[in-house]
Image 1 (tube, rainbow, N blue to C red):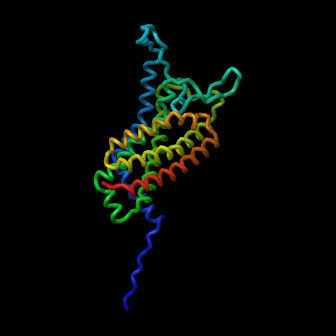
Image 2 (cartoon, one colour):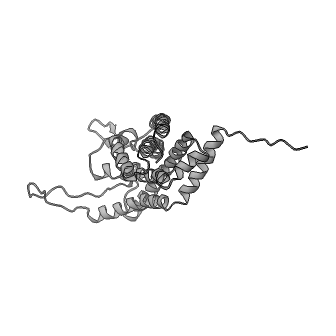
Image 3 (cartoon, rainbow, N blue to C red):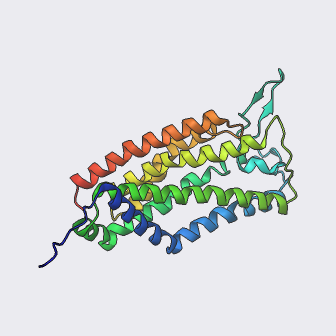
Length: 277
């Protein structure tokens, strides 16, 4: 008597898990991933060394010809993470500092850097024909979108951690101060990093949506992602200041979850309504 053949039912969880395993394996075997992480690690070290070398340099104002303000290197290593809290005349602590070079060129650059990885990672699927073959034989489009958001989030989180490590190394090499000033605590710094990691979900969701819309046109995806990301970039410092608390972490977690769900649904709809080539 022949035994009946039982086919295992393919559930959403199993499909998503399988798709995530494939993408994680591809990411960790990709040269692009390690280049992106290496850049996040090296950039703060190079910045610390170069700013220390030009500390005190005075340049002439091109409009007036008069000497301008001298270039000041960061005194504290925490300036690579965010704007240091300052004490006002009334003695109240504020997380908003001056708009100097470190207010723009700090760890928040990782939010723009991950756009390159996400766009190239997604667009390569459509350029090589992998996505079309994938949707034909196994994965659902929702599984694909979830996997790409998770993989991009992991890469973004590792970029933030690499930038932090590079900042500490650059500060140590250039003998910058590790002193906690203006009421800043280690807890604030930890909360700041965790909040930025959760906020990465917002940016990755935007980049994935733009990438699946651009498909094989990676140049269009990168330009669109950088342009879209810049609309929110100036808000990162305000949402995740160096003086972050648990409230900042919870807000970033909630915002990241909402953007991942909402834009994930939009990405799924784009894949269903448009051609895969």
